[in-house]
Image (cartoon, rainbow, N blue to C red; front, side, top):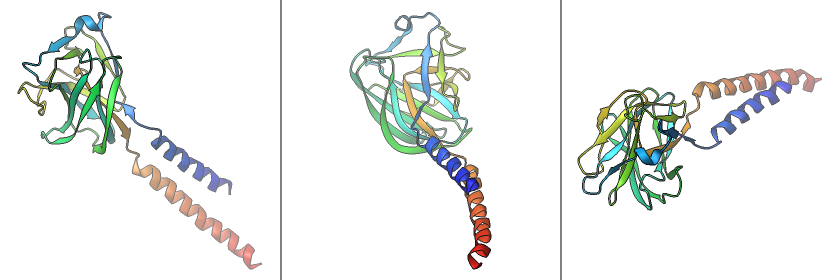
Length: 220
């Protein structure tokens, strides 16, 4: 019985870990100058573009929300956020309302989109009606700031599209660690099937053995 309870506890712990909620891809960013307002560069409404970053998940993930840093408009407004695969297929998009009152990210939930480990994906932000401000981080940037990323997400370079429209940011620059700080997303790690297979197999084996042990006692 103790073994059965132990297996049940392990399974419950695994399910609890899965249900703890979404993680943030870009958890923050740091400017080498210490003054983010001094190094922001504006994208004017007369020449809007889609800006963001390329990335590789280090494990299979489900993207659950798209968002952006709340202060990139320096006020209230909307940003259109998109997620693309390396072929340019739009996997998900969302219009996110910003207030500019903090540097934290604001998110809009989406239907979960599964991304495969080791594949390239692109995240971009577009301001349809007002100036937006961006900050470049990474080893190749002039400011030499850096993004604080979740361990499950590896930056692959900054990405952009200058076609004055919300579009696949197919042009990539830089190296791992480079990014344009505007868009963000939340995700959940997809549990390894082997974990549940192992637990399920162990519980079935134990129940089978338990029945065999109990059967002679019942016959007596």
